[in-house]
Amino acid sequence: MKDYEIVDTNAGNISSCSFCGYKDANNLGHRRKADWLKERYAEGLRFKVLRSQRFGDIGMIEYALGNHAWRPVEAEGYLVIHCLMVNGKHKGKGLGTLLLDSCLRDARKSQCRGVAVVTSSDSFMARSDFFIKAGFVPVESSPPYELLVKKLKRAAPDPRFIVQKERLLKRHKKGLTILAADQCPMVPKCVADIAEMSRALGLEPKVVRVRSAKASRELPTPYGMFSVLYDGKLIADRPVSGTRFSFILRDLV
Image (cartoon, rainbow, N blue to C red; front, side, top):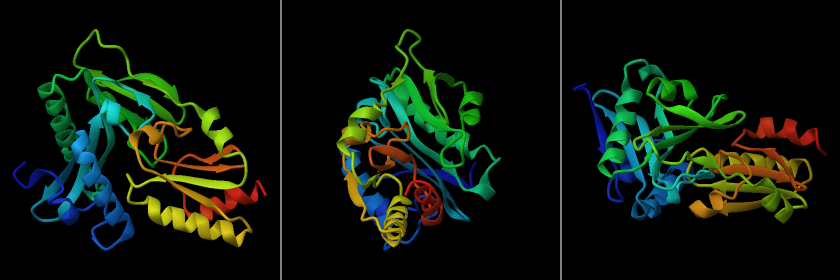
C-alpha cells in the first residue's frame, strides 16, 4: 500500500497529527489529547497515525502495556488497544488490518502474552467482528462491552474486566459528578455541553478529571474514560451530547 504510511508518534511530532478528525492544534480537545499523549509515551504507550499521501491523517491506533492501560482490565503482560479507527470513506481497503498488524508485530517483538481490546456493540467504540476476523476471541462480556484477546502465548491467563462500581458510586453519593479523561479528544466538548445543560436544569456539576491509568481503571464502566454519576447512580457510561444528556437528566429530576 504505497499511498499510505504508519507514523509512529512521539512528543516531538504529535501536535501536528490529527486525532479522530480533530486537526486544529488550537482546539481544546486536540490540545488536551496531545498533552495527554506526551505524558503517556514514557509509560510505553504507542499512538500510530495512518497517513495518506492524498488525504493526510485518516486513521489511528493507540495501545499500552496492560499495567498502564486506560481500560478497567487486568491484562498483565498484554498490550491493550485503546482505540483503532479508520475514517469512514477509507474503510474497506484493509487499512484497519494494516494498523492492527503493526500492534501485533510490537507485541511479538516485546514477547507479550498477546493483545487485548475492549469493544462495544454501539457506535462509539470499535465493534468485535473486525477483531474476531483477525483471530481474537471473546473472554468476557458486560453488554454492550466485550473483552477480546489474541494470545501469543497459549498458556497465558485470560485478561478480565475489573469493574468495581460500588466503591466509586459510594464516593459520589450526592449531586452530579462528571468523571472524564483527556484520552478522547471529544471529551472536553462533551463535558462543557453536559455542564451547560445541567446548569440550565438547576444542577451545578462537579467535574473530576481522570489523570492516571489507575484512576481510569476505577471508573464504574468497561469504557474507563468517562462516566456521569447522579446521587450515587451511573447515568452515562460514555460521552454524550448535551441534548442526549438533557433527556437522561429530565427522567431523573
